Image (cartoon, rainbow over all chains, first blue to last red; front, side):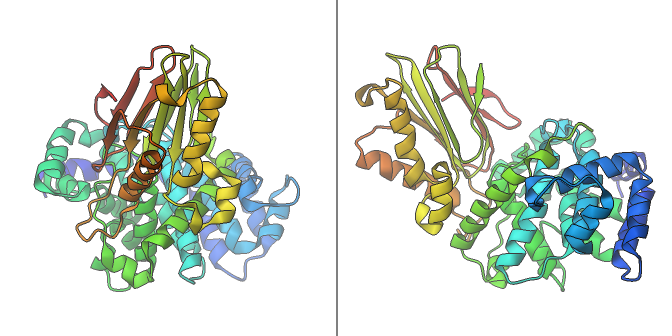
Length: 283
Length: 159
């Protein structure tokens, strides 16, 4: 490893740890024997999490018939699977909301991109006839976590990176790797590892631009496409723009044509409008 | 005053102190229309070329599509006092991802759809900044008609 890579990897330690209470809840949500009341109890130990979770639940995205003001009611109405989404969404806002000046992203843009990508994995999964997967949703929310670290290192290298993109035909990811020795996706995977996430989560984050590098790649294919299409829609666009590789193989694998991408964009737009209140975070 | 045009959205105004602005055009296309005589302008941020793929969504939000959004943009500018023969029309956006196989063409198709509609209606395009792999922000100042485009991570330049 070069000294630059060492320096970047060492910066992972400066990220706030993934909240303990969050990790505990994720485990509880996976365990069918955990009583709903017990889960609600743990969430309520953390007042900001409770407030965030209630805000998320009450956004138009979840379409509840009336305003919910208790975690217990929210859990009962949504069921474990959708409630897990709510909890993960509530955690990640504060990790991703800050500006990323290295990528020329202002405050809130990375969070908007991350939530949009997570919602897009659901749209694409539905269209491809796949069941929704809370693990994929979580990975989609966190897929660009590497940018939070790399943003501090990439600034002065941007002209060099863009030169590789514009005159050498590299993707932004390939140019990051060439110039910095590490790209934002792999770095994200290292962060996931550092947070003791599952190896599956680590792989989803590490390879979100290169899904075909993994053998069992259905979830990766969905995440890759969701991320790409959100970039095309301009959702949380940074200096990297649209300079990522379009992979025909993924479209074929999912049985998607361009028309399907258009339908997915139209549907995501409708869902994002409903999710607007979740995006207005003051963390 | 900044009037922000969201994705799949349109705003038009005759207030001289207004600036129409739309952020982060990727494969989407921004269509700017301005009448320098009466200082009326409109800006559309369209997302997709043709409404026939999802008629219900086009009905709910016609600004999502080129074929339903562009006519409404012009209608609104006419309503505010703009006259067709004086209109200055500019386009920006329609970026593409890095795609040698040509599977992801929505940006190009948005641009072609807009050009076709404008051409059919005998509307000339004064200038355009389209394509590439970048995100663009477009501003139109109604007092002066000054139109600018900013590339994310780059300079502001006149459109």
